[in-house]
Length: 252
Image 1 (tube, rainbow, N blue to C red):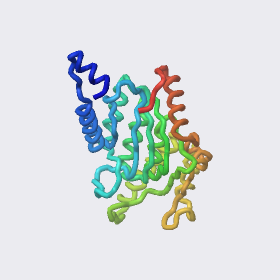
Image 2 (image 1 turned 90 degrees about the horizontal axis):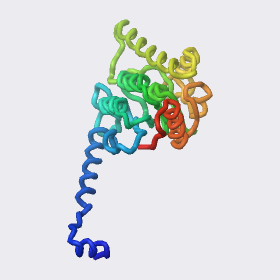
Image 3 (image 1 turned 135 degrees about the vertical axis):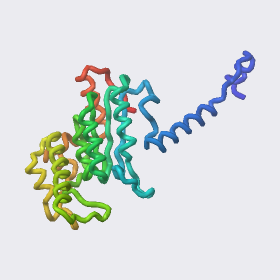
Image 4 (image 1 turned 90 degrees about the vertical axis):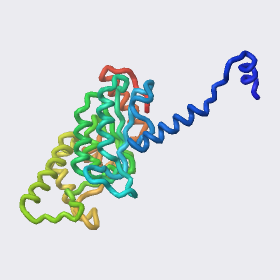
């Protein structure tokens, strides 16, 4: 028995065990991971005013992917974005990406939500920001990529064994691709002409057309704003928060 415990016992005060609270916290964290893919949600830590959202693996949309696939479910991300926008304690949002792409409409939905937020947003591309991950990255007010991050630019691909058998199907795919191109070029410094050149380039990908850009190449092409890491991403988000007139943030 420690001296603190003896003193509490002598004073007649009941010592409250911390084990129960610890177990409850573990249960809440496990629940958050199952439901939202994150250890914390906006409401849990009121003293933190920068929220972080991860986009990892494949962006899962209308089709449920096999259990072995690591996915980010867009029905989990969108409510969190709404909560961040409405919560007055949250002053800025950091979006961390390491994704291979995924469902086009789900990815664009996330990107359009990010683009329309009133609060400062910064994206950080780690590892990869491929395919539909690129619109999500450029949707934030400021985008940062690490030196070793890679981004794949390619034409819209079909999945699930779909075969283009009628002109209307091809026209739909072409319109969907144009949506992606317009969104990226509207939210970055790259021109539509240059983006399409990279998208239809041959020689970079063995079994496909397109381009693979590393961090500095993406910056030089005007797709990403800056090469940096976590420290720089938080610093930039704090700058944007100060410019917006909000108090300086702390990372969640």
